[in-house]
Length: 255
Image (cartoon, rainbow, N blue to C red; front, side, top):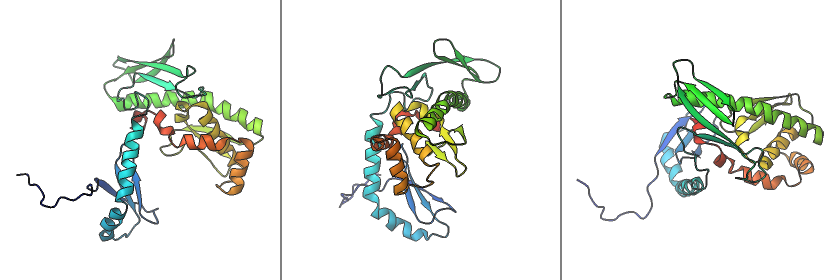
C-alpha cells in the first residue's frame, strides 16, 4: 500500500550512488558520470558512518551537476547514444563543429561465420563482417580501425606542429584512454587518444600544443601556461571548448 507523507520534504531525495574504495585515494571524492551516475571514491579505512553527512553537504552540487549534464546531453550529436553505430563523424579536419569538412564514414554490417573484422571499402565505408550480433566485438574492431586512422592522421600532424613551434619529442603512440585526451612522459614520449579524431581541428591542435609544451615543463605551472600562450596565443578559447569535448565522442566507445 502506498502512503502519502503527512509532512513531505521540500528537498529532493539524494540520488542513488555507489561506493568504491581506492588505495590511491587520500580523501573522499564524488564523481558524476556523463550518464548522471554518482560514484563516491573513499580512501582505505574511511569511516563509513561519516558518508551520509558528507553526501548531504554535497547534495546540491550533485543534483546541479546531474541536471547540467542532462541539459548538455541534449546538445550532443544525434547518434551519441547509438548502440549500433551506422556512421562515424570524424571532425578532426573541421574548423567549426558540423561543417562540411567532417569525414563521414558509413558503417554496414554483414553476418559471417569467420572472425569479426572491420574492412574499409570505397566511398568512405566500413564493413563490419563476422559475428555482428555481438556488439562488444563490433565495438572493438571499430576501435582498432580508429587507432590505425589516428596513427595515420594525428601522428604526422603533431610531428609537423613540433617542427613549427620548435618543441621536439621522442615518439608518439595511439591509445584509447578513458579520462585523458593525451599525455606526455618524462622521456618526452607522447600518447594520443584516438578519440581526438572526433574533435574539431582547433581543439585537436590545442591538445597537441599542450602536450608538446609538457616536454619542457612536466606540470601546469605558470611557466608552463606561459609557454602554451607563447606557442598558441588563443589557447584559452580551445581549452574552454575542450571541457565539452566529450559531446563529440559516441558513447559506445566507452562500452
